[in-house]
Image (cartoon, rainbow, N blue to C red):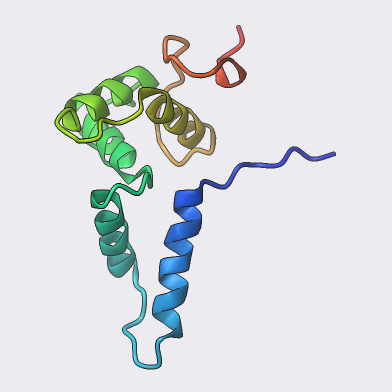
Amino acid sequence: MPRLKLILPSWVAMVEIVRQLEEQLYHWPVTHSMFNTIAYVATRQGLPTGFVLMFAADALKMEKRDVPTEVEVFEAVLKWKQKRRPPLNETTVASTIRNLGMLRWLDIRPDAALRVPEEESISA
């Protein structure tokens, strides 16, 4: 039996935002730029979209001129969002980094030092 993949509720919310926009009689087309704006606003409002992680990974890759590790992205996100209230849940951040990396949505190197729930850990 194929293993079911988890669809994050935040991604369902993003799809619903786009669906509601497109149902409007007179609406602008939802382009890549508009979707980025929607994602940015949703992230600022506290929806855990994962886009912060993508930005951090891309910035580290440019800065280092190398693919960052999961832990490097984790540390960069926590440093960048250290004043956020309520604070980010570290387990959720770590799991999201691991999952986006496994889906190849983040260009990162796996790192066994990333603290994730046991079922997501890297087996040696």
